[in-house]
Length: 426
Ligand SMILES: NC(=O)c1ccc[n+]([C@@H]2O[C@H](COP(=O)([O-])OP(=O)(O)OC[C@H]3O[C@@H](n4cnc5c(N)ncnc54)[C@H](O)[C@@H]3O)[C@@H](O)[C@H]2O)c1
Image 1: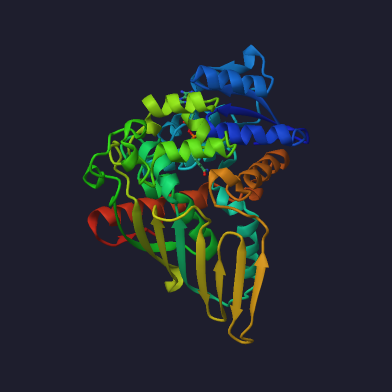
Image 2: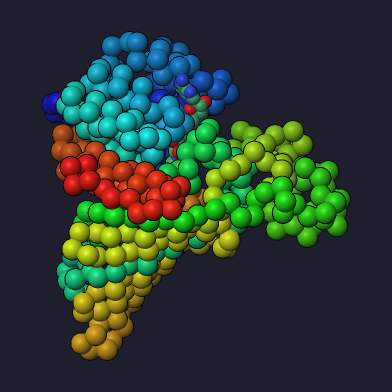
Protein backbone atom coordinates (compact mmCIF):
# COMPACT_ATOMS: atom_id res chain seq x y z
CA UNK A 1 0.00 0.00 0.00
CA UNK A 2 1.26 3.53 -0.81
CA UNK A 3 2.01 5.77 2.14
CA UNK A 4 3.86 8.58 0.38
CA UNK A 5 4.71 10.13 3.73
CA UNK A 6 7.53 12.47 4.45
CA UNK A 7 5.86 13.75 7.58
CA UNK A 8 6.00 12.16 11.04
CA UNK A 9 4.36 8.74 11.06
CA UNK A 10 0.99 8.73 12.86
CA UNK A 11 0.77 5.87 15.31
CA UNK A 12 -2.16 4.16 17.00
CA UNK A 13 -1.18 2.16 20.10
CA UNK A 14 -3.30 -0.89 20.96
CA UNK A 15 -2.39 -1.96 24.49
CA UNK A 16 -0.51 0.76 26.36
CA UNK A 17 1.12 -1.40 29.01
CA UNK A 18 4.87 -1.73 29.48
CA UNK A 19 5.79 -2.37 25.87
CA UNK A 20 3.19 -0.20 24.14
CA UNK A 21 4.28 2.72 26.30
CA UNK A 22 7.97 2.10 25.62
CA UNK A 23 7.50 2.29 21.86
CA UNK A 24 5.14 5.25 22.09
CA UNK A 25 7.40 7.18 24.45
CA UNK A 26 10.25 6.88 21.93
CA UNK A 27 8.28 9.43 19.91
CA UNK A 28 8.38 11.94 22.76
CA UNK A 29 12.16 11.99 22.21
CA UNK A 30 11.92 11.82 18.40
CA UNK A 31 8.88 13.88 17.38
CA UNK A 32 10.23 14.39 13.87
CA UNK A 33 9.89 10.64 13.28
CA UNK A 34 6.38 10.08 14.52
CA UNK A 35 3.48 11.09 16.71
CA UNK A 36 0.93 9.11 18.68
CA UNK A 37 -2.59 9.97 17.48
CA UNK A 38 -4.58 7.32 19.31
CA UNK A 39 -4.55 4.74 22.08
CA UNK A 40 -6.68 1.83 23.20
CA UNK A 41 -6.01 0.58 26.72
CA UNK A 42 -8.32 -1.34 29.04
CA UNK A 43 -6.76 -0.15 32.28
CA UNK A 44 -8.21 3.28 33.13
CA UNK A 45 -5.20 4.59 35.08
CA UNK A 46 -2.73 3.53 32.39
CA UNK A 47 -5.01 4.92 29.69
CA UNK A 48 -5.26 8.29 31.34
CA UNK A 49 -1.55 8.58 32.09
CA UNK A 50 -0.73 7.64 28.50
CA UNK A 51 -3.26 10.11 27.06
CA UNK A 52 -1.79 12.90 29.19
CA UNK A 53 1.80 12.07 28.20
CA UNK A 54 0.91 12.12 24.51
CA UNK A 55 -1.56 15.01 24.77
CA UNK A 56 -4.44 13.09 23.24
CA UNK A 57 -7.96 14.47 23.21
CA UNK A 58 -10.91 12.28 24.31
CA UNK A 59 -11.80 11.39 20.71
CA UNK A 60 -8.38 9.75 20.32
CA UNK A 61 -8.66 7.58 23.41
CA UNK A 62 -10.41 4.18 23.54
CA UNK A 63 -10.80 1.57 26.25
CA UNK A 64 -10.71 -1.42 23.90
CA UNK A 65 -8.81 -2.03 20.67
CA UNK A 66 -12.13 -3.09 19.12
CA UNK A 67 -13.50 0.43 19.60
CA UNK A 68 -10.39 2.03 18.09
CA UNK A 69 -10.64 -0.25 15.06
CA UNK A 70 -14.40 0.29 14.69
CA UNK A 71 -13.62 3.80 13.39
CA UNK A 72 -12.15 4.51 9.94
CA UNK A 73 -8.35 4.46 9.78
CA UNK A 74 -6.87 7.62 11.34
CA UNK A 75 -3.18 6.66 11.65
CA UNK A 76 -0.51 5.21 9.36
CA UNK A 77 0.53 2.36 11.61
CA UNK A 78 -0.68 0.45 14.65
CA UNK A 79 1.47 -0.88 17.48
CA UNK A 80 -0.06 -4.09 18.82
CA UNK A 81 1.25 -4.64 22.32
CA UNK A 82 -1.54 -6.53 24.04
CA UNK A 83 -0.68 -9.81 25.76
CA UNK A 84 0.56 -12.83 23.82
CA UNK A 85 -2.83 -14.47 23.26
CA UNK A 86 -4.43 -11.21 22.12
CA UNK A 87 -2.42 -10.49 18.98
CA UNK A 88 -4.18 -12.29 16.13
CA UNK A 89 -7.55 -10.52 16.24
CA UNK A 90 -6.30 -6.92 16.48
CA UNK A 91 -3.72 -7.68 13.77
CA UNK A 92 -6.42 -8.96 11.41
CA UNK A 93 -8.71 -6.02 12.15
CA UNK A 94 -5.96 -3.38 11.84
CA UNK A 95 -4.57 -4.92 8.64
CA UNK A 96 -8.06 -4.92 7.10
CA UNK A 97 -8.23 -1.17 7.71
CA UNK A 98 -4.84 -0.66 6.04
CA UNK A 99 -2.68 0.02 9.10
CA UNK A 100 0.97 -0.98 8.84
CA UNK A 101 1.74 -3.17 11.84
CA UNK A 102 4.35 -3.18 14.56
CA UNK A 103 3.58 -6.33 16.51
CA UNK A 104 5.05 -7.45 19.81
CA UNK A 105 6.60 -10.89 19.96
CA UNK A 106 5.60 -13.63 20.18
CA UNK A 107 3.35 -13.22 17.15
CA UNK A 108 0.96 -15.81 18.58
CA UNK A 109 1.23 -18.82 20.89
CA UNK A 110 0.68 -21.35 18.08
CA UNK A 111 1.56 -21.94 14.47
CA UNK A 112 -1.99 -21.37 13.19
CA UNK A 113 -2.10 -17.93 14.84
CA UNK A 114 1.30 -16.96 13.41
CA UNK A 115 0.20 -18.00 9.93
CA UNK A 116 -3.05 -16.00 10.27
CA UNK A 117 -0.99 -12.91 11.12
CA UNK A 118 1.34 -13.29 8.15
CA UNK A 119 -1.63 -13.99 5.85
CA UNK A 120 -3.49 -10.88 7.06
CA UNK A 121 -0.49 -8.63 6.35
CA UNK A 122 -0.05 -10.18 2.90
CA UNK A 123 -3.76 -10.06 2.03
CA UNK A 124 -4.07 -6.37 2.84
CA UNK A 125 -0.65 -5.34 1.54
CA UNK A 126 0.53 -3.78 4.79
CA UNK A 127 4.02 -3.90 6.28
CA UNK A 128 4.57 -6.05 9.35
CA UNK A 129 7.47 -5.66 11.76
CA UNK A 130 7.74 -8.01 14.73
CA UNK A 131 9.51 -6.66 17.83
CA UNK A 132 12.54 -8.94 17.73
CA UNK A 133 14.50 -6.04 19.16
CA UNK A 134 17.82 -7.91 19.46
CA UNK A 135 18.26 -7.82 15.69
CA UNK A 136 18.38 -4.02 15.87
CA UNK A 137 21.16 -3.50 18.43
CA UNK A 138 24.47 -1.91 17.46
CA UNK A 139 26.11 -5.06 18.88
CA UNK A 140 24.17 -7.43 16.60
CA UNK A 141 24.73 -5.26 13.57
CA UNK A 142 28.50 -5.11 14.26
CA UNK A 143 28.64 -8.88 14.76
CA UNK A 144 26.70 -9.47 11.56
CA UNK A 145 29.12 -7.22 9.62
CA UNK A 146 32.10 -9.20 10.96
CA UNK A 147 30.52 -12.48 9.89
CA UNK A 148 29.47 -11.19 6.48
CA UNK A 149 32.99 -9.91 5.84
CA UNK A 150 34.16 -13.53 6.14
CA UNK A 151 36.43 -12.70 9.08
CA UNK A 152 36.03 -16.13 10.67
CA UNK A 153 35.38 -17.94 7.37
CA UNK A 154 32.27 -20.09 7.14
CA UNK A 155 30.23 -20.61 10.28
CA UNK A 156 30.42 -24.24 11.38
CA UNK A 157 28.95 -24.21 14.89
CA UNK A 158 27.55 -21.86 17.52
CA UNK A 159 27.15 -21.89 21.29
CA UNK A 160 24.66 -19.37 22.71
CA UNK A 161 23.74 -18.64 26.34
CA UNK A 162 20.78 -16.71 27.62
CA UNK A 163 21.51 -15.87 31.24
CA UNK A 164 17.97 -14.85 32.25
CA UNK A 165 19.04 -13.77 35.74
CA UNK A 166 17.69 -15.09 39.02
CA UNK A 167 15.58 -12.01 39.83
CA UNK A 168 14.24 -11.57 36.29
CA UNK A 169 13.13 -15.20 36.31
CA UNK A 170 11.45 -14.65 39.68
CA UNK A 171 9.78 -11.43 38.55
CA UNK A 172 8.46 -12.38 35.11
CA UNK A 173 8.44 -16.17 34.98
CA UNK A 174 7.59 -17.24 38.53
CA UNK A 175 5.48 -14.42 39.99
CA UNK A 176 4.62 -12.47 36.86
CA UNK A 177 2.74 -12.52 33.57
CA UNK A 178 4.73 -15.29 31.88
CA UNK A 179 4.78 -17.83 34.71
CA UNK A 180 2.13 -20.18 33.41
CA UNK A 181 2.04 -21.83 29.99
CA UNK A 182 -1.75 -21.91 29.74
CA UNK A 183 -2.08 -18.23 30.58
CA UNK A 184 0.76 -17.03 28.35
CA UNK A 185 3.17 -19.37 26.58
CA UNK A 186 6.17 -21.66 27.18
CA UNK A 187 9.45 -20.00 28.20
CA UNK A 188 10.97 -20.70 24.82
CA UNK A 189 8.27 -18.61 23.19
CA UNK A 190 7.80 -15.84 25.74
CA UNK A 191 11.50 -15.21 26.40
CA UNK A 192 13.83 -17.25 24.26
CA UNK A 193 12.01 -16.68 20.96
CA UNK A 194 14.36 -13.66 20.80
CA UNK A 195 17.34 -16.02 20.96
CA UNK A 196 16.06 -18.51 18.43
CA UNK A 197 15.26 -15.64 16.10
CA UNK A 198 18.69 -14.12 16.74
CA UNK A 199 20.44 -17.43 16.02
CA UNK A 200 18.52 -17.78 12.75
CA UNK A 201 19.52 -14.22 11.83
CA UNK A 202 23.19 -14.58 12.76
CA UNK A 203 23.67 -18.02 11.19
CA UNK A 204 21.82 -16.85 8.08
CA UNK A 205 20.58 -20.34 7.20
CA UNK A 206 17.32 -22.24 7.50
CA UNK A 207 16.94 -24.45 10.53
CA UNK A 208 16.16 -28.06 9.59
CA UNK A 209 16.10 -30.09 12.83
CA UNK A 210 15.92 -29.47 16.57
CA UNK A 211 16.01 -31.38 19.85
CA UNK A 212 15.46 -29.98 23.34
CA UNK A 213 15.40 -30.76 27.07
CA UNK A 214 14.16 -28.52 29.86
CA UNK A 215 12.49 -28.61 33.26
CA UNK A 216 11.21 -26.56 36.16
CA UNK A 217 13.73 -27.53 38.81
CA UNK A 218 13.67 -24.94 41.54
CA UNK A 219 10.58 -22.73 41.81
CA UNK A 220 8.31 -25.42 43.21
CA UNK A 221 6.57 -26.03 46.53
CA UNK A 222 8.95 -28.93 47.33
CA UNK A 223 11.89 -26.49 47.35
CA UNK A 224 10.33 -24.03 49.83
CA UNK A 225 12.60 -23.58 52.89
CA UNK A 226 11.22 -24.91 56.16
CA UNK A 227 9.29 -22.25 58.08
CA UNK A 228 8.78 -19.94 55.07
CA UNK A 229 5.43 -18.29 54.60
CA UNK A 230 3.72 -17.91 51.24
CA UNK A 231 4.31 -14.16 51.15
CA UNK A 232 7.69 -12.45 51.67
CA UNK A 233 6.32 -9.67 53.90
CA UNK A 234 5.06 -12.25 56.42
CA UNK A 235 8.04 -14.61 56.13
CA UNK A 236 10.07 -15.06 59.37
CA UNK A 237 13.12 -12.74 59.15
CA UNK A 238 15.62 -15.58 59.53
CA UNK A 239 14.13 -17.28 56.43
CA UNK A 240 13.40 -14.13 54.39
CA UNK A 241 16.87 -12.63 54.80
CA UNK A 242 18.52 -15.89 53.74
CA UNK A 243 16.43 -16.14 50.54
CA UNK A 244 17.98 -14.73 47.32
CA UNK A 245 14.51 -14.43 45.83
CA UNK A 246 12.96 -12.28 48.59
CA UNK A 247 10.55 -9.85 46.92
CA UNK A 248 11.03 -7.48 49.84
CA UNK A 249 14.77 -7.31 49.37
CA UNK A 250 14.66 -7.01 45.60
CA UNK A 251 11.85 -4.50 45.03
CA UNK A 252 12.52 -2.29 48.06
CA UNK A 253 16.23 -2.45 47.22
CA UNK A 254 15.46 -1.17 43.72
CA UNK A 255 13.37 1.63 45.19
CA UNK A 256 16.12 2.55 47.67
CA UNK A 257 18.55 2.72 44.74
CA UNK A 258 16.30 5.33 43.15
CA UNK A 259 14.63 3.19 40.46
CA UNK A 260 10.94 3.65 39.78
CA UNK A 261 10.70 2.27 36.22
CA UNK A 262 10.53 -1.37 35.16
CA UNK A 263 10.12 -3.72 36.97
CA UNK A 264 8.75 -1.65 39.87
CA UNK A 265 6.11 0.01 37.71
CA UNK A 266 4.71 -3.43 36.95
CA UNK A 267 3.82 -3.76 40.66
CA UNK A 268 2.19 -0.35 40.89
CA UNK A 269 1.92 2.61 38.48
CA UNK A 270 3.43 5.12 40.96
CA UNK A 271 6.13 3.25 42.90
CA UNK A 272 6.71 4.67 46.39
CA UNK A 273 7.63 2.78 49.57
CA UNK A 274 3.97 2.73 50.53
CA UNK A 275 2.55 1.56 47.17
CA UNK A 276 5.29 -1.05 46.67
CA UNK A 277 4.76 -2.46 50.17
CA UNK A 278 1.01 -2.49 49.47
CA UNK A 279 1.62 -4.48 46.27
CA UNK A 280 3.87 -6.93 48.12
CA UNK A 281 1.20 -7.45 50.78
CA UNK A 282 -1.63 -8.35 48.40
CA UNK A 283 -0.35 -8.56 44.82
CA UNK A 284 1.23 -11.40 42.83
CA UNK A 285 4.75 -9.98 43.08
CA UNK A 286 4.84 -10.40 46.88
CA UNK A 287 4.35 -14.16 46.66
CA UNK A 288 6.97 -16.64 47.79
CA UNK A 289 8.68 -18.00 44.67
CA UNK A 290 8.01 -21.50 45.98
CA UNK A 291 4.26 -20.90 46.33
CA UNK A 292 3.16 -19.55 42.94
CA UNK A 293 1.01 -21.04 40.18
CA UNK A 294 4.01 -21.17 37.80
CA UNK A 295 4.89 -24.05 35.54
CA UNK A 296 7.32 -22.66 32.93
CA UNK A 297 10.80 -24.15 32.85
CA UNK A 298 13.70 -22.51 34.67
CA UNK A 299 16.35 -24.14 32.46
CA UNK A 300 16.28 -25.49 28.92
CA UNK A 301 18.68 -26.50 26.17
CA UNK A 302 18.00 -26.65 22.43
CA UNK A 303 20.21 -28.15 19.72
CA UNK A 304 19.79 -27.03 16.12
CA UNK A 305 20.88 -28.31 12.74
CA UNK A 306 20.83 -25.63 10.07
CA UNK A 307 21.14 -26.18 6.32
CA UNK A 308 24.62 -27.22 5.24
CA UNK A 309 25.09 -29.12 8.50
CA UNK A 310 25.79 -26.01 10.61
CA UNK A 311 25.02 -26.80 14.26
CA UNK A 312 24.13 -24.62 17.22
CA UNK A 313 23.38 -25.19 20.88
CA UNK A 314 21.38 -22.87 23.08
CA UNK A 315 21.13 -22.77 26.86
CA UNK A 316 18.57 -20.71 28.74
CA UNK A 317 18.91 -20.68 32.51
CA UNK A 318 17.44 -18.69 35.38
CA UNK A 319 20.42 -19.31 37.62
CA UNK A 320 22.75 -16.48 36.68
CA UNK A 321 23.45 -12.92 37.64
CA UNK A 322 21.78 -10.48 35.27
CA UNK A 323 23.98 -9.92 32.26
CA UNK A 324 23.93 -9.90 28.49
CA UNK A 325 23.69 -12.95 26.31
CA UNK A 326 26.96 -14.68 25.44
CA UNK A 327 27.82 -16.35 22.16
CA UNK A 328 30.71 -18.30 20.70
CA UNK A 329 30.80 -18.72 16.93
CA UNK A 330 33.25 -21.20 15.45
CA UNK A 331 34.27 -20.64 11.82
CA UNK A 332 36.64 -22.24 9.32
CA UNK A 333 39.17 -19.38 9.67
CA UNK A 334 38.61 -18.12 13.18
CA UNK A 335 36.61 -18.03 16.39
CA UNK A 336 34.36 -15.26 17.71
CA UNK A 337 33.17 -14.54 21.24
CA UNK A 338 30.58 -11.89 22.06
CA UNK A 339 29.00 -10.85 25.35
CA UNK A 340 26.41 -8.37 24.05
CA UNK A 341 28.94 -5.56 24.18
CA UNK A 342 32.45 -6.78 23.36
CA UNK A 343 33.22 -8.89 20.30
CA UNK A 344 36.57 -10.73 20.19
CA UNK A 345 37.80 -12.46 17.08
CA UNK A 346 40.72 -14.91 17.03
CA UNK A 347 42.25 -15.35 13.57
CA UNK A 348 43.70 -18.85 12.88
CA UNK A 349 46.11 -17.47 10.27
CA UNK A 350 47.74 -14.73 12.33
CA UNK A 351 47.07 -16.07 15.81
CA UNK A 352 45.90 -12.59 16.77
CA UNK A 353 42.83 -11.59 18.72
CA UNK A 354 41.08 -8.33 17.94
CA UNK A 355 38.38 -6.93 20.18
CA UNK A 356 35.64 -4.51 19.25
CA UNK A 357 33.76 -2.59 21.94
CA UNK A 358 30.30 -1.82 20.56
CA UNK A 359 29.95 0.54 23.49
CA UNK A 360 26.47 -0.57 24.47
CA UNK A 361 26.61 -1.55 28.12
CA UNK A 362 23.63 -3.88 28.36
CA UNK A 363 22.26 -6.59 30.56
CA UNK A 364 20.10 -7.49 27.57
CA UNK A 365 16.90 -6.73 29.45
CA UNK A 366 14.04 -4.25 29.29
CA UNK A 367 16.01 -2.10 31.76
CA UNK A 368 18.59 -1.22 29.12
CA UNK A 369 16.02 -0.93 26.33
CA UNK A 370 17.38 -4.31 25.16
CA UNK A 371 20.83 -2.83 24.52
CA UNK A 372 19.46 -0.12 22.23
CA UNK A 373 17.27 -2.58 20.29
CA UNK A 374 13.99 -0.92 21.32
CA UNK A 375 15.06 2.40 19.82
CA UNK A 376 16.68 0.73 16.79
CA UNK A 377 13.49 -1.15 16.04
CA UNK A 378 11.32 1.97 16.30
CA UNK A 379 13.65 4.00 14.11
CA UNK A 380 13.71 1.27 11.45
CA UNK A 381 9.96 0.68 11.48
CA UNK A 382 9.14 4.40 11.24
CA UNK A 383 11.61 4.78 8.38
CA UNK A 384 10.03 1.83 6.60
CA UNK A 385 6.57 3.38 6.88
CA UNK A 386 7.81 6.83 5.90
CA UNK A 387 9.58 5.53 2.80
CA UNK A 388 7.14 2.72 2.12
CA UNK A 389 10.10 0.33 2.12
CA UNK A 390 9.62 -3.01 3.92
CA UNK A 391 13.32 -3.84 3.41
CA UNK A 392 14.16 -1.44 6.24
CA UNK A 393 12.40 -3.82 8.65
CA UNK A 394 14.90 -6.48 9.77
CA UNK A 395 12.22 -8.65 11.39
CA UNK A 396 9.56 -8.99 8.71
CA UNK A 397 6.90 -11.70 8.31
CA UNK A 398 8.81 -14.47 6.52
CA UNK A 399 11.85 -14.80 8.82
CA UNK A 400 9.80 -14.15 11.92
CA UNK A 401 7.41 -16.91 11.01
CA UNK A 402 10.39 -19.19 10.42
CA UNK A 403 11.92 -18.46 13.82
CA UNK A 404 8.55 -18.98 15.54
CA UNK A 405 8.28 -22.36 13.80
CA UNK A 406 11.73 -23.19 15.23
CA UNK A 407 10.32 -22.47 18.70
CA UNK A 408 7.26 -24.68 18.17
CA UNK A 409 9.43 -27.49 16.80
CA UNK A 410 11.80 -27.23 19.79
CA UNK A 411 8.89 -27.32 22.24
CA UNK A 412 7.51 -30.38 20.48
CA UNK A 413 10.93 -32.01 20.77
CA UNK A 414 11.12 -31.16 24.48
CA UNK A 415 7.71 -32.64 25.16
CA UNK A 416 8.20 -35.80 23.12
CA UNK A 417 11.89 -36.30 23.80
CA UNK A 418 12.42 -36.66 20.06
CA UNK A 419 13.94 -34.74 17.19
CA UNK A 420 11.62 -32.37 15.30
CA UNK A 421 12.06 -31.55 11.63
CA UNK A 422 11.10 -28.27 10.09
CA UNK A 423 9.49 -28.86 6.76
CA UNK A 424 11.17 -27.26 3.77
CA UNK A 425 7.82 -25.74 2.74
CA UNK A 426 7.30 -24.02 6.11
N1 LIG B 1 10.09 -7.34 22.71
C1 LIG B 1 10.32 -7.67 23.97
O1 LIG B 1 11.46 -7.84 24.37
C2 LIG B 1 9.20 -7.85 24.94
C3 LIG B 1 9.41 -7.71 26.32
C4 LIG B 1 8.33 -7.88 27.19
C5 LIG B 1 7.08 -8.20 26.68
N2 LIG B 1 6.90 -8.38 25.34
C6 LIG B 1 5.58 -8.71 24.77
O2 LIG B 1 4.83 -7.51 24.65
C7 LIG B 1 3.43 -7.78 24.84
C8 LIG B 1 2.91 -6.87 25.95
O3 LIG B 1 3.66 -7.08 27.12
P1 LIG B 1 3.68 -5.98 28.30
O4 LIG B 1 4.79 -6.33 29.20
O5 LIG B 1 3.62 -4.61 27.73
O6 LIG B 1 2.29 -6.37 29.01
P2 LIG B 1 1.28 -5.40 29.76
O7 LIG B 1 0.32 -6.29 30.45
O8 LIG B 1 2.04 -4.37 30.52
O9 LIG B 1 0.52 -4.64 28.55
C9 LIG B 1 -0.55 -5.18 27.83
C10 LIG B 1 -1.66 -4.13 27.89
O10 LIG B 1 -2.74 -4.50 27.02
C11 LIG B 1 -3.92 -4.00 27.63
N3 LIG B 1 -5.09 -4.66 27.04
C12 LIG B 1 -5.56 -5.90 27.28
N4 LIG B 1 -6.69 -6.12 26.57
C13 LIG B 1 -6.90 -5.00 25.84
C14 LIG B 1 -7.92 -4.61 24.92
N5 LIG B 1 -8.93 -5.45 24.61
N6 LIG B 1 -7.84 -3.38 24.36
C15 LIG B 1 -6.83 -2.54 24.69
N7 LIG B 1 -5.86 -2.84 25.58
C16 LIG B 1 -5.91 -4.06 26.14
C17 LIG B 1 -3.73 -4.32 29.10
O11 LIG B 1 -4.60 -3.55 29.91
C18 LIG B 1 -2.26 -3.98 29.29
O12 LIG B 1 -2.06 -2.66 29.76
C19 LIG B 1 3.33 -9.27 25.14
O13 LIG B 1 3.03 -9.97 23.97
C20 LIG B 1 4.74 -9.62 25.64
O14 LIG B 1 5.10 -10.97 25.48
C21 LIG B 1 7.93 -8.19 24.48
